[in-house]
Image 1 (spheres, protein in one colour):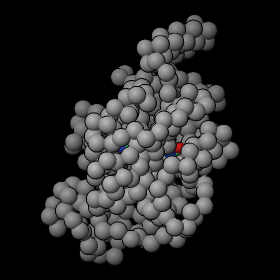
Image 2 (cartoon, helix red, strand yellow; image 1 turned 120 degrees about the vertical axis):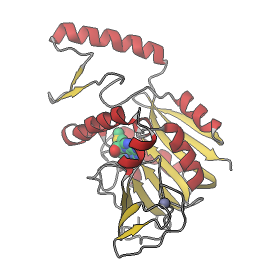
Image 3 (cartoon, protein in one colour; image 1 turned 180 degrees about the vertical axis):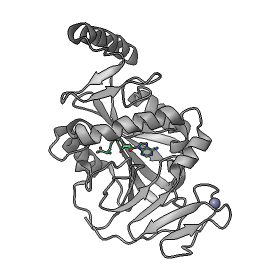
Image 4 (cartoon, protein in one colour; image 1 turned 45 degrees about the horizontal axis):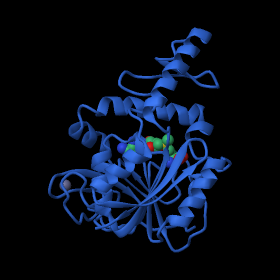
Length: 286
Ligand SMILES: C[S@@+](CC[C@H](N)C(=O)[O-])C[C@H]1O[C@@H](n2cnc3c(N)ncnc32)[C@H](O)[C@@H]1O
Ligand SMILES: [Zn+2]
């Protein structure tokens, strides 16, 4: 793995699509067409993704933001359940799956999280360049880091050969706009590799969850429909409109495949893994 990849791409404006932007000053650049601002370092780019998401998705943005706040707390207090530590069996399975299905070239990990090297990227490849994208201020990603959001990505068309979502596809503000955006930045024949949770039948899951929460409420006295009490006794609010403290909806592999197929991807592989999750590979047919 090459840890010293240079900043080696031309910026496409996330606000208006203007291309290419050239750095005007050493560590910042402004779009000459719309005035949108980018902060740059050798290894990162940052832009005001909150402004973009709140303007384009005013109805979804507040709940999305609250759920992400809960996520942030869980990375601090409950990392073994929420991020891809290398000693987790499921993480190693996903790493092996990525190695078997990815295409070398420019690799983008969307929702790369706070870790320097997420366990599933812990493999050797000196030929590819690794990029991580996450809104998290705290991310320490080893490759080039985009502090932004999947719905608006400041890269030119046909730039990446592989895009990875490791338990991040169900954390987005807009799945529809994200799929549109990744189709644009993926090369023809490029692949999307997804690690998704898989609850099986979502109606049965809802019934099971309802009775599970009812039972917990009677047993512990804590309202389990409103609060999730974690193993370490930290508490997460389940906001109205969400299925749990971190997710707005349940995304099933079937729904994911359908959403991608509608936007011009074909399903290439679907492998069920441990702990009720599924690995998927989709190919860009453009
Ligand atoms: C469950 S974590 C997974 C992190 C990492 N992939 C791992 O497995 O350790 C989901 C990640 O999605 C990120 N995320 C939330 N909204 C996003 C968005 N709009 N675009 C890209 N990533 C987003 C969160 O900040 C978080 O780091
Ligand atoms: Zn612009």
